[in-house]
Length: 371
Image 1 (cartoon, rainbow, N blue to C red):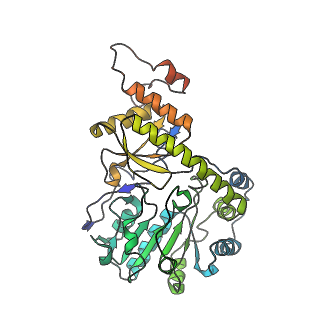
Image 2 (cartoon, rainbow, N blue to C red):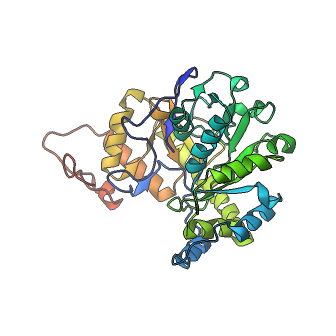
Image 3 (tube, helix red, strand yellow):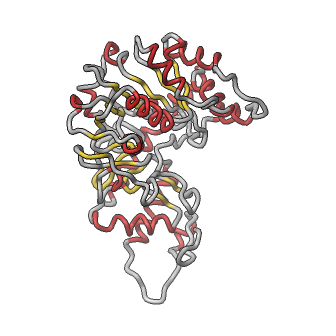
């Protein structure tokens, strides 16, 4: 996810000058060992992947998504009218922001460290970012939060006043500890944004959905009018349908057990490297190296060796890195790369140690080369 760490009282800043900052593939393609995303490293879910391979891409989906809405509504135990489909979480972020402005909204509250599209949408619609949740007409929260993976500070205010409140639940299915501290009565007053592709390890399939607040029928109608036809393609519809099945949910539950073990191992590795790690409830965490001023050079070095970590500077956390939890083999590759990073440079010597070669590394091919 892209990030923002802007000061609270200002027009929301843009990242367009340098391009929006995200984890995952970049101009060099996908890293072999990609710690930069929060996707479920146990994925892709085999059952959902098989269903995607059978998807009918020759026909349009039902434009009303009748069966899909009913499935999602039944799974969440809400009326079908409360289910809105979205092309992605980001698509809905921009659509809902536009609706708030259409209703006269001018002020937004965004957590100090958060997914950058909240601020990008606010900037596009010229909303002013305010210092306190109670001052806002639009309030964003994400729990567990990104990039911290902790309880969102806005939970104390969400669902209490007249502001439009959105709870981004992207990482709820990947929660490894803790629980959402929000009573059902207040949860029913917020817009709940779900994007299961992360939990299923299939982030390339763009699809999301929203559970609208109780009593928001008119708002739902307007948001549907602001939505283009067929926001979710055939593959996205298949993914969301599979999401509700008991077997897929059982796979997800099993994956959380594995992720907890991998996370404990990864935290121990980071600590052995001298990196200070923040507590996190999710399948990712922040790490601060002993020399934060070297983060940019370190990340560049690792990327040259097919390892990618997420620079947290765009979240307002310079000198820190976000790491998604990956399997032991990926962690071992990171450990070996860090051994290489700490080796004194020998004049006239190139290449990488034999151990790194066995781990799948190769020496950088020169400036601008794809590695």
